[in-house]
Length: 238
Image (cartoon, rainbow, N blue to C red; front, side, top):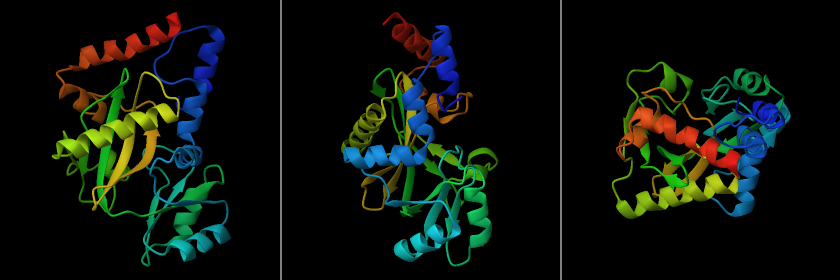
């Protein structure tokens, strides 16, 4: 439901829906397109190289050096993602990343904290810092680990917190997203933000990141659901 196909059917049928439209949904699900847009807009994102073969990957490894991140171009929830190092089974990582649509990308690995900022009705909500004992915030850390912790707000420095929220909103608008969504960052040890990706349909269980951020502003789960629905009504009226 995140790649624009369902949005396209709903548009054709004239049925209102929440969140981003066809173009933004298709752009955000394709992480390479997202990074191309961010780079073109001057929004900081880790350096990357598109890869479609084992040879491409080995060449990129030579260029960037270990450690590195290898990601499929169109998967969410860190599916198919690997942290490459001298100890990694490179062949397995390559097979995993290219096994979806044959397109992946190598990304510079930046040491730092994972930060996410939710967007609702044109407003950036308080940031969340993700603390995990895993090497990075992978599928297991997201959905299986009981040790992963979420701290909100995620940045103690008010000036820096505002900087991340402003950049999240700028990123969201650059992809032409609408209504609600989430922008994920890596906060380098220097404090500088690097945008990782944009999520146009964030998780919405009561324990998901989006409701956690909203609750910090006194927006309870039921009200949050209504406010998300409200964005679709406004868009449909326009």
